[in-house]
Image (cartoon, rainbow, N blue to C red; front, side, top):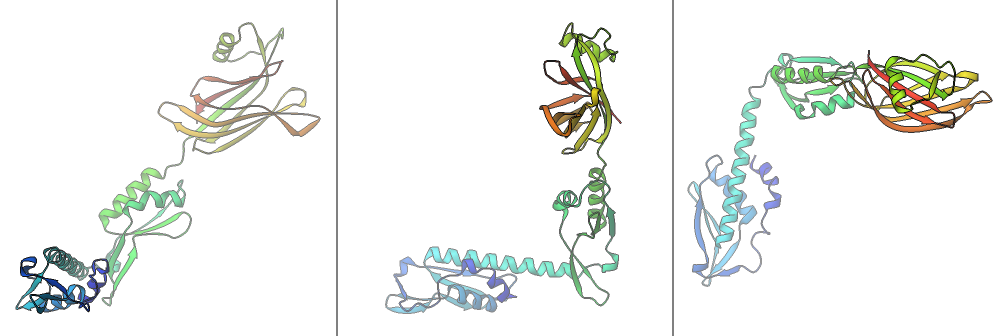
Length: 325
């Protein structure tokens, strides 16, 4: 055990013992102190101290060793700063030894492996990477005993596949991790997005628009009449980064493509951020050739009509409306 602890203190190791030319001191330059170990046999600790700090010094024409064993104590006779360094290191060494012994004592009380609570948790909505990140503060190594008494160490969280986690720990830790996963592993809310493509002009018989939308357009573009060129509706997850595509057929075989990328969704206040909103048009002559009418980012408020864009000499307007599913 002492040798193992010695390896952990290599950064504190003194220069090689017994240099060829002993350092010379006068008596008033030296300090005499003792260190009495509490948890380690004094002779064993003295042997370690000699390996790390032992040296011969010259005092008034005499050569003496800086370390000596005096019954149950280590006698240290050296420069004050060296004495302080030796005392500090021996104290840390003994503390490390006591901690190691305490860990061994705890392991003697390890539960049997079959008695360690086990939970298999299958993810429904979260991906495995996100679940492991959430559990990281709880991750640790668990120790148990096999039936033959052999000690076994294993990680308390083990992924079995892309959706299954095997968790084994104390009941208290198990409950904490299960509670966290159940709170986070919720499917994202679903929303409905309705889309209108309106075409402006001087139509004598304009389309009948929903009341709220009509009032918004009268305030935004007074005097302009609008007809519904196309409309569509889609249901989608409101998870951030989700991509939504909707194709709507317009008049004269013209088509409109709506590409959305969702951002954060505030379910409490009914607000959905669109990180990207791209609106394309294609003609019947070349359906695969699309013209980008506009691209923007915006926020949809539940129940309100959002005029997203207006383009062209004969205005083409996109209106979106958000509703929870």
